[in-house]
Amino acid sequence: MFAELFILMYAAHLAADYPLQTDHQAGCKASHGAAGWRANLAHVGTHFVAVAVALLVGHLVLDLAIPVLPAVLALVWIAGTHAVIDRRWPVAAWMRFARQAGWARHGGAAHVDQTAHVLVLVVAALVLAAI
Image (cartoon, rainbow, N blue to C red; front, side, top):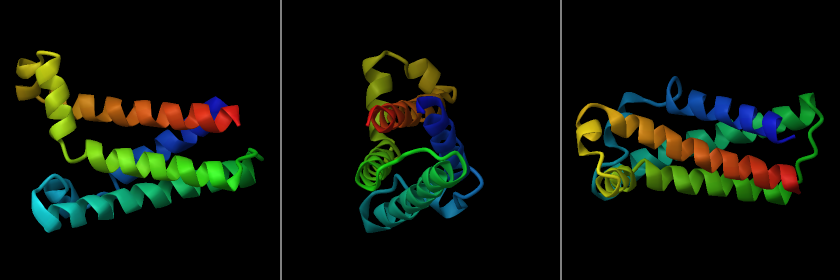
């Protein structure tokens, strides 16, 4: 069940991060103040809904046994961590710690960002599959 859950949630993540994310969200989600948080939370809401739909599809189409409370907790975990990662400072901090300043200047932050999101999805899929 892990593989099915991960693939469904990863597909939902990709949809929410690329075709469903507005230019405004992408450009402002890491901005300081209320406007930045509004853009960030609108983007995170898209993730929440996309992953919820993916889990529902997994339940209805693939007959995956996904209990409601663990599913909701997984959605909160995914949305909450996504909000923090997309503020961009955690990625920048990691890249400074890992001595990746050159890679950061040449587009590496986007790869580190996506890796962090994928690791969050792996944890969520593992926990859901273990229940």
